[in-house]
Length: 131
Image (cartoon, rainbow, N blue to C red; front, side, top):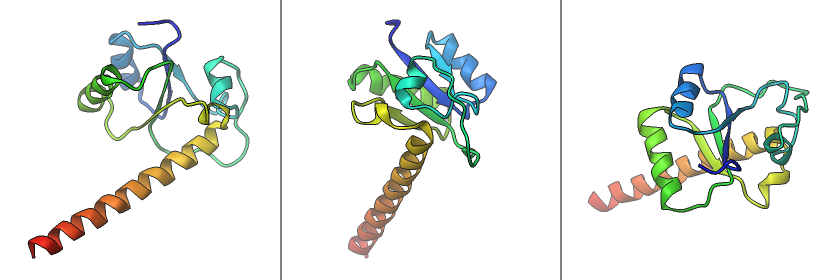
């Protein structure tokens, strides 16, 4: 794996992280002591403490230096099936690299809720058609 590839992780257990490291993945753990910076600062290992409300209990994995291709899809599928259940996963983009980590969490949680609502509505429409 390329050295510029890493996964920013937040809220994962030691066991989950050990499994991922066992797969040869390079992880960078996010915690109160470094969660105050932008995603770019986190990638560069800068320690900017988080100030304010606690970040909450959620599992987040942000893939850095990965291409959005079949290999990444296979990796995410394997991680979800075998190691980390219920994690929100995202990819670093030109847009979000400048976002503060707390904003990224907020954005991902809102996006997850919107997707759940869309899926709920889609299923309701299918049930109506089946009547």
